[in-house]
Length: 353
Image: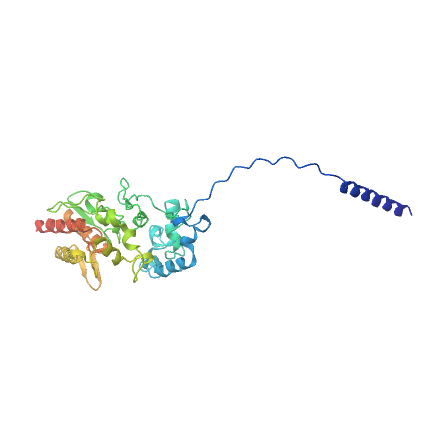
């Protein structure tokens, strides 16, 4: 009975509180406060796109599918002639595997041999965005390159504002110094059949540096002053708008970009006969080196240097020949520089006979 009375007391108290609250009257509304300060407008993204969709300018599915389709046709994507034999070696991996290049870009070195190297992929060249603006392609490396063969100098292939070619130059360089820079003297010893500039020294050719500039009749152009460096660049020619298996992320040179720049109705890259002339000079130089015993081999099994000690001009001649042969542009990358190298080299060899 006592418990029932206690519960009734609590219920009565609750009802009284509720009734008191419901009878409370509000006073008159006070004056309106002043307006707050307006926030800043958001900035538009690339090409005027709203900021919240600027990422889609590049990353929307159709565009990404197109890039992937182009990339699937590139030699870089397949890893042919690169990953299998060198991708795992700590000394080679920085350019011969995805894992090695990422380590090199982040730590400025490869931390050790790669146990399961893979071919290049999107994340090899592209990391995190920095500014998130239209020109920010999140390239892992973009600064001028310090050549492996000469840490006191730099190569800048991005003199063109729209160019990102320095990324390419990190790997496409000779790595080795020409003989007279490596060990100055009257003679030079070739110690193995793999001697020479590293395969694919296209950056050196475009920049006009790093080869053996033997004195001769033809003057050498000023380094860094070639038309294809200043007005075209690696990306301008190899990453022009994709068409017919060329350009874009295939990195195959674009004939369309040549036609546009030269304003000529071209059917191949042999503009003004540069490739024809360069090929003839390369064959002449190779045959001369074979006659001198510096080079051995044939068109079937390939050519290689013969181990031995040679007059400096002959060792330099081999360096120039194999480097320009493996440039594979047949002079297109820097016509005046390539012509001066080949003709002056032949002139020097013929003078020694």
